[in-house]
Amino acid sequence: MINCPFCGHEEIEGVDQCNECGHSLTDDSRPEPATEVERSIMSDTIADLAPHTPVVVDVSATVKEVLNTLVENSIGCVLVTKDDAIVGIFSEKDALRRLNVDAASHADEPISKFMTKSPETLKDNANIAFAVHRMDQGGFRHVPIMGSKGVPKGIISVRDILRFLNEKLHA
Image 1 (cartoon, one colour):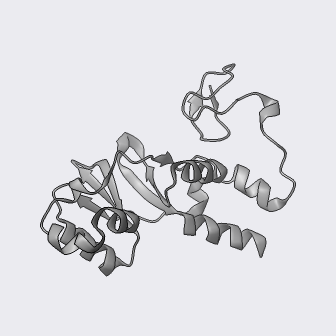
Image 2 (image 1 turned 180 degrees about the horizontal axis):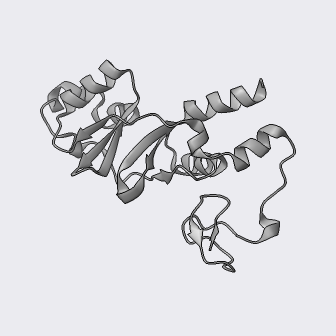
Image 3 (image 1 turned 90 degrees about the vertical axis):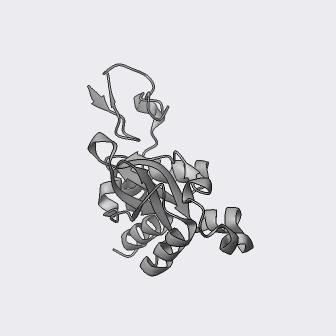
């Protein structure tokens, strides 16, 4: 067995393409890093970002409860769960796009009506470059990090990646 150098998914040795992320697993498909920062992005993992403990709300939480949670914790998103499994994510972007000026009229409705369902997740052994690629392609700023048995273990944001890169640039 080998691990995909992009996402960390375990693959059978000899396969040409990762079944998880679709990247080529042939030796010539991965460019050589030209700088220490490039090397770091390509080889350091999400675990190196020290993902934050996610704030989690139940699928039955109301819009008002979730908005208060975001403000009280000074965070940009919450994970929405049902029986400890992630069923959605609700971010400040969702608040602006789906609630906007009508937020007060939806205050008592369940967050499940406004959340982003089935968000993409990553494992903490995925490379930072893979996380950046997924976030760029998906157009999102937060990614839940999964532990064993599908339980959310952490969350990273674009800001976490930028902070990490800034530290590498000034090291």
